Length: 416
Image (tube, rainbow, N blue to C red; front, top):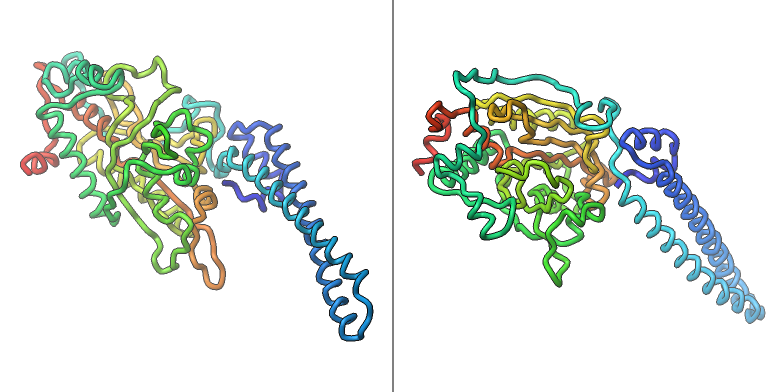
């Protein structure tokens, strides 16, 4: 959630930044009005409280002096009723304000480029040069079928479209990739954590998936429980409503989970193959830290994910997202896109985001900063999407006869 005090202090400045992200001016005006209504309600409540305190002192003086207190007592009792009404109004206005604020995205960093959509994203750099093939490279679903690694028809038979079943070397490579990524991240200082794949509503509100994206989530019927869209949700919410000692920061975590997404907004796109599925494996990086180390850790997370692709000898590029492509909770995001020769293009394989204190305000994650409690900064990123990494290995390491070479760094993991 955005800092409402900052909004009250500098409404025009904050609004201008949010409108860079496409936030409707009418929604912001409504937020401003509700903020003013809450301010008035607080003043009314505090005025009545001050009057009550003054009358209470006067009541005590009357008693000591033996004066008749009946008239004053009636005023005190009547004011108590008004205080209760004022408190109810204040709570109502607070709830109305927070409900609107929960639908407001994070404020983009000043250095995020302006743009309407992914076409306006800015390439930062390319890493490794794509291989030149002497033949026309196949797409991954052709290679999967030829090698017997992935069966999309049987996946659909079991669960419907956009599900798949991995066999033999396909299944082994998925497991090898997961172990390789977790070990790689651990060596870079990220502690492995295993978390549940189902979370409650409060957790998803904390990281910003709810209430806005409820239709994209799989909900457990009859319960306020959801299948996770990413390990970011349980990893970040491990510290929900906690005050972390300063000396414990930064907290750097990595974890593997399956992820579950309806992908309702992607109809008609990437419906074939493994690029966009309802269930997929992913290794995640999450960091909780102070604001002063936030940028350095953001760069470290990008480097860590990029270095995994380099170790796998997969050409890729780093792209900074523009305001129009920036996610709801992100203040800044760098995508890593891997080269897919079968499609002759770069495709997203990781997204590293700094949410600043946006998620921390929603999830109430703070740290002890001297004599005061401050909100942490939270960061998250894919390291990496396992299925897409497998796709990239298949397409980049294919031979003319359709066989696929295995990256050297994965071979020890296939012998485990």
